[in-house]
View 1 (tube, helix red, strand yellow):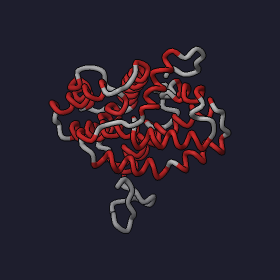
View 2 (cartoon, helix red, strand yellow):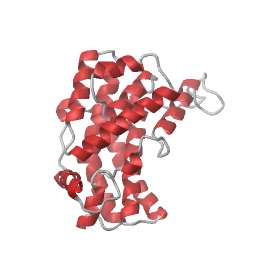
View 3 (cartoon, one colour):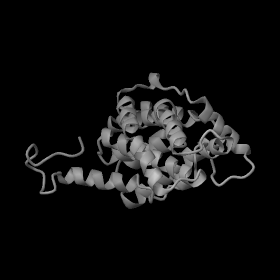
View 4 (cartoon, helix red, strand yellow):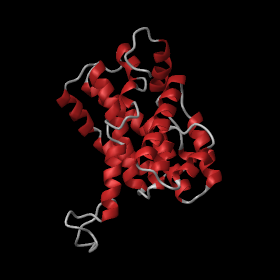
Length: 245
C-alpha cells in the first residue's frame, strides 16, 4: 500500500504518510500528470478514426470503447509490460528485462501506435532523469538495448526510485485513460462535466485492470479489441487529422 495511517505506522508524520510514501506519491502525481511533457496530448490511440467512423458519438459510447481498451486491449497489455519490467528491474534480472523491453516494443498493432509509445517512452525517461536522476536508471535503460516503450519506461523509472508496483500501475492507467478521454472530449466533442463523468465511470475498470495486470504473467498477454486496432491502422490514412495516432 502506498498510504498508511499513524495508528498503524508510528513513523508516519502528521499527514498520515511516511516520508518515503510522500515522495512516491509526489513523484507519481508529477510523472503521470497531464502536464508532464511527454507529448501525450498529440495522440488519440485511434480514437480520432473511431469518432469519424461513427463508433464513438457521445459520452456513453466513449465510455464503452475505453472500457474495452482497458480490459481487453492496450490498457491491459501495457500494464502487464509495466508490471513485468518493474519486477525485472527491481530484481536486477537484466536478461528478462531485455526480453520484456523487446517484446513490448513489438507488441503494437500499427506504425502510429509504435511512434506514440516509443516517443512517449523516450520523453518520459529523459525528463524524469533530468529532474529526478537515479543512480540505477541509466543501467536499466542500457540493459533494454533499444527503444523503450512508454509502459516499460514507467516501470523502469518507478523501480529505480523504489516506488511500489501497485500505485505505479494505478497511476499509469489513470494517466492513459485521462488522455484518451481528453482526445475524445475534443473530437466528439464533450463538455468538461461529461468528460469527468466518463472518468468516474471508468474508475472500477481501471482498478480491476491494474489488479489483473499485477497478477498476470507474459503468457496472459493478448488483445481482443480488433476494432480499436483497426482504428489505429486506418488513422494512418485518414484525410483530416488533429492527432498523430
